[in-house]
Image 1 (cartoon, rainbow, N blue to C red):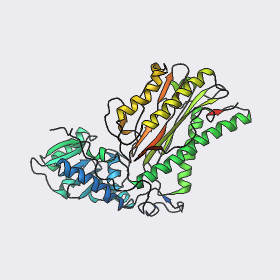
Image 2 (cartoon, helix red, strand yellow):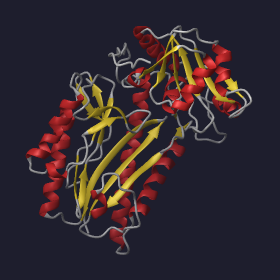
Image 3 (cartoon, rainbow, N blue to C red):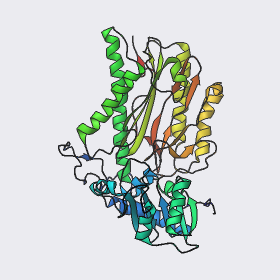
Image 4 (cartoon, rainbow, N blue to C red):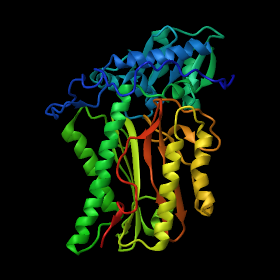
Length: 430
């Protein structure tokens, strides 16, 4: 089995950024009585013809006759079908001639029809089944002659791959990141979804600040991390269901991490019952997905007059995040962008507090390639979206991180999230 390590072409990106065509807003309502707002999270079925054409172009360039993937994000990307992954296989088979087949269990058939999944269906009865599930796919596309070059997504498990090979034949099966790389550059319709997710993320940050500000004004008990997180999540999901049609429910629809004081010194700490106290540094690390497309936005706040120490830490992160954002541009390598950003922190003498890279790609996954990290030479191109989130973490004190989701453009990049970053705007008086 040969590993596909050769560079893969990015393909054409003919759609000009900023023009959001009819592919948004044309999907019928999924639930009776849902809002009649004009913003629709569902992309039109015809949109996926262009997505599949982009992947087919890459198949042809790499000499593959077809590709198989069971990654739920790939399935949604190629066909528009979102589902809850479980033991029953759901997979997409895409051929170089453009034929697209969606393998799914009978219990998902109507679900896929309702979402107008853009593919032929190959349906199996149940799992494990008298007839193996991948037998339904083999029945639809035929057995594969020996030496036929077929790609498979790098996320597929060994058990799933073995089941597919046993059912479909002794082809030349090759692992590939072809679909992953195709997802790097977003179509305009996807960018519109990301932009709306950014608007809602900003609303959630604002809502969290308002909750705390009102509690301070009331003079009573301040909210806990968990209470703030719950309040923020309700704002995000509530906004979607009130203002959108066809809400796409994914693993994390809206919410994130809320942590204060020493708890925030853990980069991925989870909300607890800790209640905010005057003098605390606290972080709202939030995000949401609109149409399955994610955005994250993070701000670090101080409750009360900041100390000299808090000012110094916040200032250096604000500076690193600004310089790191300026480095995010078309033609720049991820590893160089990361180095430019984090060197600001190192040169200020705070390098010992670094715990992670500058950022990562964002799309159908909250974390996906490319990676703004020293080991990733990927060159950014217009239409990519990456996070810009340098942070420092001081044990027994707090963490400081500022994050925006950045859209790479022909002339540089722009932040999709817009909540103010400066300390004055991120200080809540007590």
